[in-house]
Length: 455
Image (cartoon, rainbow, N blue to C red; front, side, top):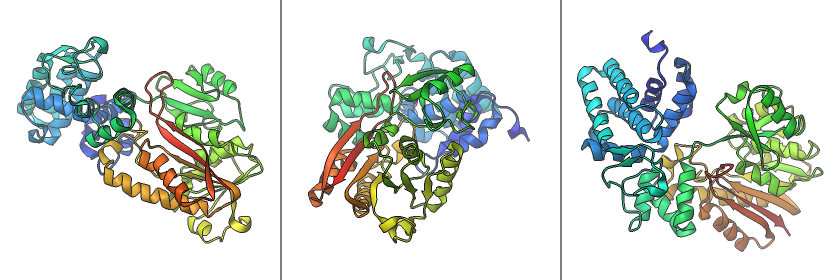
């Protein structure tokens, strides 16, 4: 029964981190099951994902200033220390004494006084080496200062000049091979910005359902409910301040869908026409499927499928909530075997939002940084190429393929498209667009879109 008592955000965050191995499972569902145990839900969420995003940097701080590698710290103590260090480094508004005191009390409750003494010693040793918890980065010594502006008294980070890949990998807790790849592709300054964007707290954007409302009407409705918003990119709405999206005015009525600005790009670049017959081949959970329906005023014939038949229910849920009736959801094997109700099984357009490495959405899909490897990217590119060939066989003459990823890797994007076009001279590239993750202005994820037309 004690486990069901109201807990602090820190205690819940530690519980989630204890149960989550980011290489094998996801923090979100675990957090969802435990959030009811705290009244500080937004803070608990930030502690979980902030600690996970910055874990390599946090572990470097712990190992450097405690003199003990994290592998030699008991796992049930390590996450208490990690959350404490996350707050010391990345939440400078939180008082040091509050961070340390609660870590001590939490440790006493779960592991006893002796272990609490160890946690206290580690955190206080780290604090002794912090010069300034929030220094302007333009004034910072890069060997001593982490990306949030926390300055230490010792140069413990790789040298940015001589080892930019090691520096960026440590400071932003990203795989070294990925940093090396980005440096070769984008150069140091753009790579640093990508890294910063990959560690940001991502904003929540919503796409108004223009079948039911307008952007301004929805913004006004949210304002009347004391929700501060900003209209960006003409039609998208940025939510300012934490609120449960499902509780917002207009959600139950189907007046909007959560979607990042960059994720909305493929359909906008495609500009689908109302007289088209369209297949969304990798449709679940249906965010882009419903965007197609909204963009064509529900006049286009839209078919949606996904190789994971269990996820087709997500498309049904989304179309039902949004009041979209013009989407036909079809089993994947029916599409491939031409058993569906589609006339001659050829399409004016195939939307191909392929499974990818998620390197453009590392801030939002935190676990991806623990799973992405060169081998995994190569395996995904093979699947993407096969899906692209399948789509090419399903479009009519003069038809269109809209290919999209939430990756920024050349091998999944322009490189793969180039290889396809070299092997398929019946198609030509009409347009392509790579968006890099950004933490500036209207922050956004990264992603790629290519529009291919059958000659």
